[in-house]
Amino acid sequence: MNKENIPASMEIAKDVTDSEFKKARFQSRLTWVITFSVPLAAFLYWLLVDASFFHSNNAPPYRLAIVWGILANRVAYFIFKDGRKMGSLRMQQYVKLKKFRLAREKSKSL
Image (cartoon, rainbow, N blue to C red; front, side, top):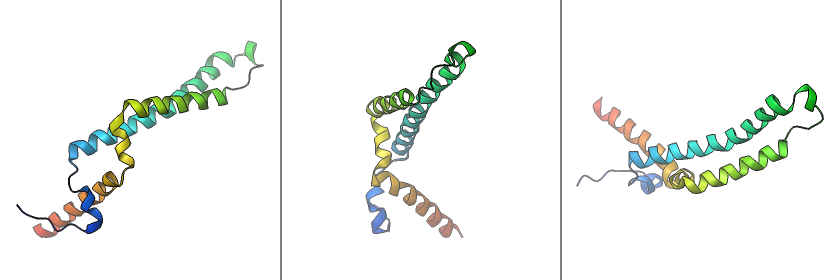
């Protein structure tokens, strides 16, 4: 088997597959979209429905929207378990390792 000469800092990411990385990245991004869309939807609902001329006494639901966003984040965090991997050093180093391998292939082809 051909042994790659990988820098020691990137050695942790050598067994990450591209499909594993894409799945983790997708689930991580989906978690963040859910996290920020729920409070935005709550605020837009207030803006379009409750903030009319007849209901001008109510204040915007900032606190409620923030709480709903946190709850949505926690639920999405536990539903999309592979998205948690994006915070690991293994996945972060995989991006660098991928760039390193591409640069090496370019230099070999020249």
